[in-house]
Amino acid sequence: MVVPRGSIGDHARKAEREATMRTAPQVVVIGAGTLGLCTAVNLVEQGAGVTVLETNTIASGSSGRSVGVVGTQLTDPLDLLLREHALRQFRNWESLGLEFNHIGYLRLARTEAQMELFERSAGLRAGAGFRSRLVQAESLRELVPHLNTAGLAGGIFGPDDGYIDPHALCTMLSALLRDHGGEVRQYCRLEGVIRRSGGYRLETTKGTLDCDIVVNAAGGWAPQVSAMFGQNLCVGPERHEAASILLDRALDYTMPMVMDLVNGEGSGLNFRHDRPGEMIAEIHHVAAGPPENPDTYNDRYDEASKVYLAELLLERLPGLPGARLGRGWAGLYPMTADQRPLVGPVDPDELSFVSAAGAGGYGIQLAPVIGQVAADWALHGGPVSAPGTEVLLPPPESNVGSLRPGG
Image 1: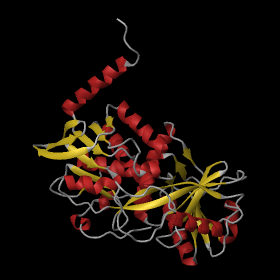
Image 2: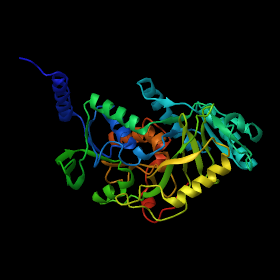
Image 3: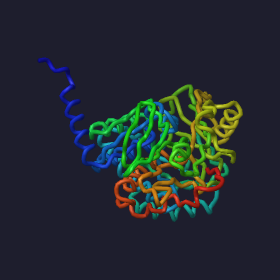
Image 4: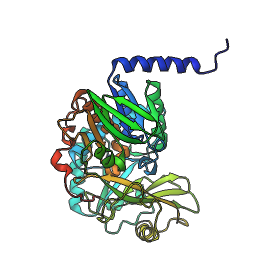
């Protein structure tokens, strides 16, 4: 008998999955973006049976529209703690073949007070294992020769930071998940939830699925998923835009990621090298507005935004060779009221429904630790592998009321 190539491995994985389903907790993760897939990989590596449901395709939501920055230039101890856990996982995935472009990250300071804040945070960063150095205004052009330093007091630079391709990350994670016996069901929409003894019966466009635990990692759709479980998750999708910047010729240096925003102060302009002769730019900080509908929002870069972005770029990067706007697009930042992600069960009486949502504009870089903590809540009832992240647990009272869009 001739056995088709790959069928032996397929049968072995199917048998392993069936054995796991008989003995391990069965977890369904809603959403196949970076948060959902990081959660799924953490779960399956701890022995859970995992199925990921995705309405569209892998990385088709916010993850696929991200510019992929992974940076550690923050001043808050919790922000640094989260990135300490996240970078540990990124280093592991990099050893498995994930391309991490270590071009460096420069966060600009406009005032001496911000420079003092950077100086204090440098000590915290060193304690977390992150390299960084303060850069005075007169030295900024050593890092970015085209930078206009008017109005700047200096900055802080992390040489090990950079960017990844979110699609490549999601593809790698889905492969890791499948290698451990997990499954991703694309074009599979959740349509209904029935509570049953010890878990849930989920009604989807591809049939019913029984499970013990559900993790809501649906990004901009997370509030809709939460409502299907009778819960209110206060996450508001906020529209943000990005564009490529085309140059007549490649720069003779690699431009690091540059951000003009410190704790909400600054223009929010950020830009970075993407490939020879091309950059990517966006405005991280936007004006307050109502949350977007993720099903109907405008995913194109509008003209007024192009003009504003061009003005900021001309002010901060004069003299780029033939710089012009290329393709543009819009995505969603799932924002929370305090601009911190919500990770854990919303309802203390329903610990088997866990949220992993609201990472705002930092979803890519925080996805590894959010997935780690969400998996801990699902399997162990708390963040046992990441002490200090209990503060991300969504308190019920925080999930009622209006959102304050952040930056």
